[in-house]
Amino acid sequence: MFERTINRICGYKNALYRFKKLGFVRVFSDNLSDAVGVTPSQVRKDFSMFAISGNKRGGYKVDELLEKICFILGKDDVCNVVVVGAGNIGLALMKYGGFEKENMTIKAAFDIDPAKFSEKENIPVLPLSELAVYVKKEDIKVGIIAVPDIAAQHVADLMVAAGVRGILNFAPILLRCGGETVVKNVNLELELENIIYFVNAREKKGTVLEHETKQP
Figure 1 (cartoon, rainbow, N blue to C red):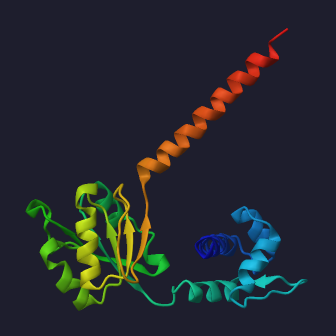
Figure 2 (cartoon, one colour):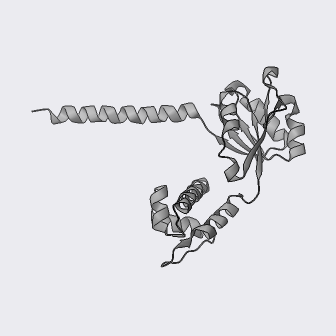
Figure 3 (cartoon, one colour):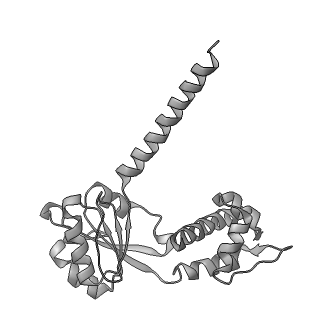
């Protein structure tokens, strides 16, 4: 339940950035509810959990609300991240320029393929054997796993042992990490299959309805 709340808080943040670009100085719960797809009462309920209150007539000041939300999400400090797996997904993440505006920086990537090693790039690709030392030296708290499923649990174990406390996993396997490590699994194949199912289901439903309307 709390995870859903945080997901909505992130949605409000993104909406507020869009409103700010459009010149909004104040917003109301109705504006945020429309942008995120929830009810205005849900917006107010989510904010009340973090002691955020607005004005019935004046709404919320965009800049003040953004500051509070960024503090809640830990955006006031830069979060340094490492990626393990310099394949297609790993490289795409390394090239993505949207992390910096969210105060997130991918500091380095790690792999087992010597052909991918490069210390001279903006984001170096280092041997996986150097992960533990690097994590402790740079005080890395978050890691991204972008390796095949057969290697994902081993990589997760290495991250946890090195001191990583949050893992975003792109491998299509459910990781098991003990202690206080937070793991978020992102299964792209599963999400795509889910979408394909509902697309096909709607098309089949439409075909059935069309057939029924043609019956005498």
